[in-house]
Length: 183
Image (tube, rainbow, N blue to C red; front, side):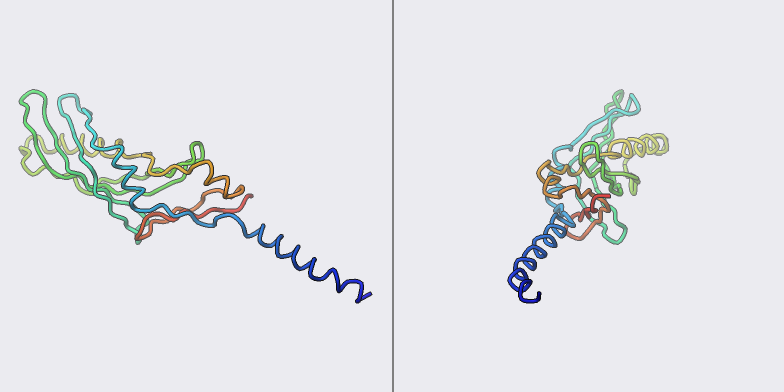
């Protein structure tokens, strides 16, 4: 009996290797570089909005900072606020940070849990500071909440062979999206 199985042994080993390689196939992680994130943001900014009617906010191109220790991303914007009546323009800075989530409906990575870290308009008269900062904070949160930072291409997901994006980690070089096996 042993002699009849010996010729089949190499064939069985090759079959086992193919089966194990198929099980291990598909990406475990996908890297999204800092440059890819910056490019996505540059398509969206500068941006202007009039959230309070009489005021206009304009944010310029953001500077991207990755915060791996907090698993968040930070953006620092040049900011301008102007009123429509007197036509005064006040310059300052806006800093926000946010977490990340995967949206399965369009295979995108989006901003979530936006926090205003800094809203500064140093030349703004004291009488306007409180109402403008309140409107500015709401403007900043609404501007970035749910912003698409990366969209997976259909071929990226096809190569994953049924694996789906799971945890998203901020790294010093960008994002690392872990893929989970099919349930």
